[in-house]
Amino acid sequence: MKMKKFASVLLSGLMAASAVPFNAATLPYSSFIASAAENSAAAEIASGKCGENASFFLDSEGTLTISGTGYMKQPKELYMPEEENLFLQTPKYSVKKIVIEEGITEIGMQAFNKLSEVTSLTLPESLEAINLNAFEGCASLKSVKIPDSVTSLGWCSFANCTSLEEVILPNNDEYTCISVFANCDNLNSISLGDKTTHIPEYLFAQCSGLKEITIPDGIKDIGIAAFSECINLENVIIPDSVKIIAPVAFSDCTSLKTITIPENVSTIGKGAFLDCPALTEINVDSENSYFTSADGVLFNKDKTALVQYPEGKGNGYIIPESVTEINEMAFSDCDDLSSITLHKNINKIGSSAFEECNNLTSIIFCNPECKIFDDAYTIPENTIIYGYAGSTAQEYAEKYEREFVVLDEKAPELKPTLLGDANCDEIVSLADAAAIFQSIGNYDKYALSEQGAVNADIYEPGSGITPLDAITIMQIEAGIL
Image (spheres, rainbow, N blue to C red):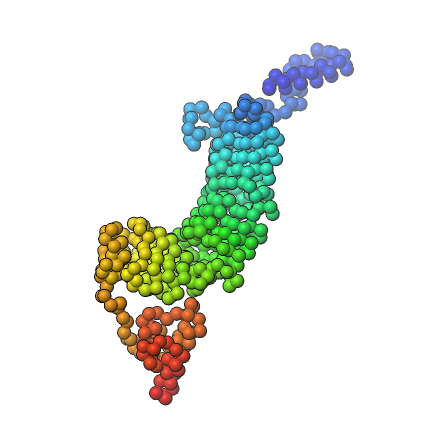
């Protein structure tokens, strides 16, 4: 390469010499060399092969140019030779700009990893694949535009690009990827093309810089773990076009507080919102035909299956009587949950339903035939299980060496602590009448506690709660009774 440049300069000199008389005194050799240096491009620092049909050239200004066709691999001459482990390599030269020319179709694994001074990256329209860790650790890179021709983004291909702020993704519906932008702490602008209908799995996993996301209209599905471990993500707006939210799509989003499921979502994968300790509400559009929510808890449409309990909702939850099934991972990681009663209508507990509920001290099974998923992770090992002798709960407890306490053969019945005390504040007042009316009008939102429901049945104890109970309390307050 040096010889070619020198030959070019020499040819220019000869052409100039043919136009004027040659005078050695007026053009000494040193002046000729100086003139050549002034007219030449930046000097070569390193060059060589980086693929069967690919080569690289690094100039003195820090511009690294990749040319050729097909696959390119890491230019090893750019790194210290002592370390063969690609993950531990140290760059030998200062690279500030990378230009990959048209013709290159694939960038090999760790091709440019740890080139921490790179601030500019140009990718060709011929590019189809970027392999794992290709640009990992390019800590000064602030923006990147990935061509529409790319269909594969490898694992952590732009991970630890800690200055990266803006990304323009391929405008196609074909690319696949895994954890592409992991630990990109400053990434706050992401552009998805209008031809994109799905967010690939793990695309933004571990992207700690994201705080707010508006998913563009036209996206139909959110892939597995697409936003997993986005620990600073606080707000997500999901458009009506979305139909599928895949498993663990938003898992470990530790700052996420609320989320709304739009009307066309028909599938929510297990653990979609797993380990989100700040999440207090999962709301569902009233027009959704597949899911509903009550008091921030996610259910299937007819409320026979409890799909997800928000981890940040806290303790003291009463499961609606309509529920017959607790879905897999429904209460997983709910550390604030200390006890729960599974009423007699519940006949199935899914896998890992209460996994990692580290403070769950007791769980009561009122249905002796409730089917409990046969796995040690379904119920935490330190949880005391209450149930009937010979029940499935006892079988589970004995198999997995859990402490088991036998309930009386007859289901325990609560007795009134104070008739009329619907809100259990130890006095009877108009507030109790209001609580009864609210419970009757909107049970999902204003359900009474089990003890409150027993206390509220004042008109004809044992007949169930009716408006007459509230009227009776009002009459007592008015001195009529």
